[in-house]
Amino acid sequence: MDKLKIAIARGATCSGCEIEFVDINERLLDVLGIADIVYAPTLMDIKHKDVEAMPDKSIDICLYNGAVRLEESEYEAKLLAKKSKIMVAFGSCAYTGGIPGLANITNRQKIFETVYRDTASTENPDFVVPQTKCEVSGYELTLPELFDEGVKLLDDVVEVDYYLPGCPPLVGQINTLLDVVINWVGGKGELPPKGTVIASSKTLCEECNREKKENMRIQKIYRPHEIEIDPEKCLMEQGIICLGPATRGGCGAKCINDGNMPCRGCGGPTAAVLDQGGSILSAIASVLNITDSESTVTDEEIEKMVSQIVDPLGTFYRFGLPASLLKRKVTEKVV
Amino acid sequence: MADEKFEPNILVFCCNWCSYAGADLAGVSRLQMPPHFRVIRTMCSGRVDPEFILHAFSKGIDGVLVAGCHVGDCHYIGGNYRTRRRVPLLKNMLKQFGMDSERLKLDWVSAAEGDKFQKVITEFTEKITELGPSPYRAK
Ligand code: SF4
Ligand code: SF4
Ligand code: SF4
Ligand code: FES
Image (cartoon, each protein chain N blue to C red):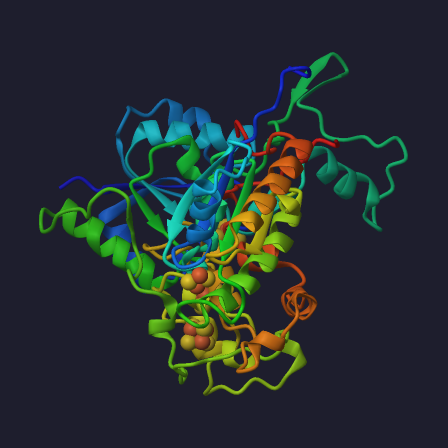
């Protein structure tokens, strides 16, 4: 049998996803026994031109991590999609936009102003910013363009076969994916249907060990550092925003069970949900200090209650703004 | 075109037990109303998931009105307690998305308040017309 050919492609990545892939530890040796890593710019010296020279569909599986926010990332995604049989969106950034996706509340000009002018450690009086082309001593230098329209999903630029959520996906989830692919290559199993998300089909709350009350109420919202967190009780009941109800299980509720911290939603939306942020907004607002004397509660008091959540957009779409229904910030015309 | 008259698209969610009956009463009483809105009837205003509203905005709707029974009168007792929290929280979030939060409105209309429905929808239509097309149109 020919060895399986794997590519590890990347867009705007922190490399955490790649590190997690290497973290499969001794399993990596098994994998390398049956597979060749033919493209992984983080791990080896290889260029786009080397991939361009490969025959179409000659790579079995491409794991693409990182968000698509540079012309170059989009090119890499399209090139690898052409050369690979299976394309996997690996990790939150590729799947739902991830942390870089929060850039969709701003635009290129503002990002340049912050990064190349306003930060405390920057001295750039002429406000020199990256250009896609410039001439130096008679040579033309080029840089890929940073999209003004914001961060895109891998799904926006190529056809994706499977999604592996998580920031980064956990070793267990990576092993599940590898098992499926290895069995398929060995003729011992079928591939899951296209579009499968390699995680649980249930919400994260189902994987959480905490005691959940029927008629739960949030009295006041706290940030995790503001209170002593009870490790037995549901975090929401303690007033800590937990994205569990709107997030897909699969990680084993790692942050909650192992870390005594709330879920921040890196698993992405559950199968039943259109919009992760809308879904958690609904869940939280529905239990926000409803009492038996509701008729006496004024609109102003409600206003105060909901304003305790200072950054709903950033909290509810921390890992998935480009995958949300509204996708990015807009500007109203001034009337 | 700057001088072309802007005709807003407005979506109205009415709960079955009060506001839909109120809208119906406005209709059978032949009260004059601007024709720019479409009504979707839900059993309760509490059934109006914020995702529905986000979905409507993502499709380029210019304004969304949610109408339900007055607080204390919800057929399901507490449905509108949820609504009156979700809508303001969603408005806060829409502001962060760069939208004018007045594009989303919550009001209470009972089955007997045909005239109130007329007033609310007329004023809302005027407001949305003044704001112009949603910035999410053609996105
Ligand atoms: S998903 Fe997380 S770990 Fe992976 S590249 Fe993005 S930020 Fe890094
Ligand atoms: S909301 Fe969070 S803490 Fe509460 S049950 Fe769900 S996952 Fe667990
Ligand atoms: S608990 Fe939530 S934030 Fe933590 S790993 Fe799981 S999905 Fe991600
Ligand atoms: S039935 Fe009218 S608001 Fe609940």
